[in-house]
Length: 265
Image (tube, rainbow, N blue to C red; front, side):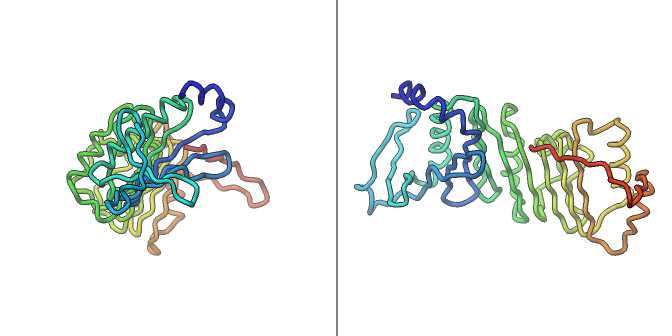
């Protein structure tokens, strides 16, 4: 059956660039992307003993999973919360067998629902919130397989359990976005190895900012960095002091400034 589907739908499969596993909610969803939008393929729910007779079961990558087809037009996968990781890993592996590794399998995860898949050909988008002080979550982050691409990490007023080491998986993300309200958060942009960095803070050490930008400009560090955005919401900071220190050149207002197109990560 799988071979028949592959052969009959080969052209259609080529138009699918990405399948997304949205794991940030209590009831995750699976979406398939087209060039212009995302379509919900499947949603999930806690299994209900009252509706047990309404479920049908399928063997998905050697895992028996309960499904229910509802009026909204797509199936609901039903499971006990303790089985969440196993269920979605099985679905991922089934899609991998069906679509192959020519499309992207993107898992979006938050530290409140920290389920890190141990599956091949996957990329991760992680969000860490203020509540992320659990040592267990940090251990899960560092245990992410080397074969998994960490596509993007966002931190929002984050308080990690310990200072991040320079070799942390955090700094290996292709893109990071950090928002913090003080200088005590133990995140050091100087260890970043990715392509894009966005940083916003209520207060900041100007000397560190100047050092970072000058190291980047010199070519001695951050060779992969393509785009950097830093916003410091502090009225006491004089912008010209920073601009002069990093050697920003004056551009005549009557001339067209050089453009920089942000590559897509």
